[in-house]
Image (tube, rainbow, N blue to C red; front, side, top):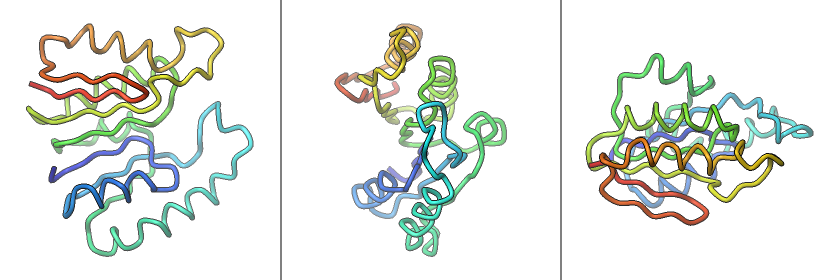
Length: 159
């Protein structure tokens, strides 16, 4: 894993985990640091400050690039291909499906897509939760998938 994309970074702890797991990989972190509907009472200035402090070593050593923008805007300007994409951004049904499709397009052959919060049930209408979008995505791309592991997270390897 040389080039990793993270959609949704929050305080940067997952980026630190990936940096430890995949030594010398370059990580691109995309987040608005403004939250979404499940983050009603969170101070995102503090969350972003924590992110900046947590990833300082990685950024100083050019192992991490921070993109403060929506994932849609990131993908509109992105030309890079990634070995690994971690999706943990906006959890709304439509945005999850967009993030999955855009991530798949930016994923190299034999690359891995890891989707967080498959078993996340914030919305009362279950169709609006991430699992619904993940299931649609898998069904639409099943012929391009070489490995699939589903639990609370979903790991997909692209053919």
